[in-house]
Image (cartoon, rainbow, N blue to C red; front, side):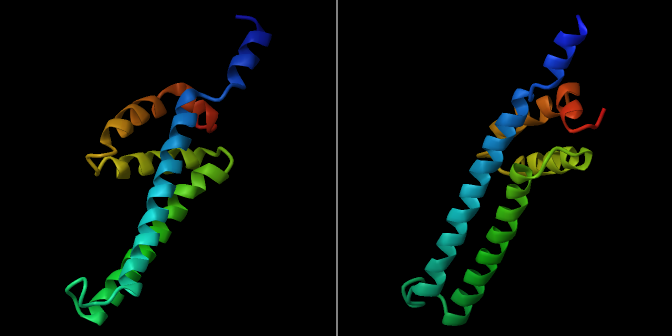
Length: 126
């Protein structure tokens, strides 16, 4: 392999990075929807949801806070430049996604391909 071919190959973004960005973008949308759903607890009549006004308020606040924190956590890999620590952060997000049976089929290939040398090299890990 010549030097020109090697540098052209090194400058390409691994496909797993694009799939990871789709994954985190989907999670961002999911957490935004969850934050929007938390408004239901603020705006609905507590008798309609069979809980007291205090319970509805506490549940709405907790749901809103957790969804905003997770939204920001999933947004970071989309806006930050590749750094060695970001590779580890991405793995943590993938592993957190593995706790959900709905997202597990996407997380397993993401995890496998994120551990390959190309992905590590993209983040400056190798």
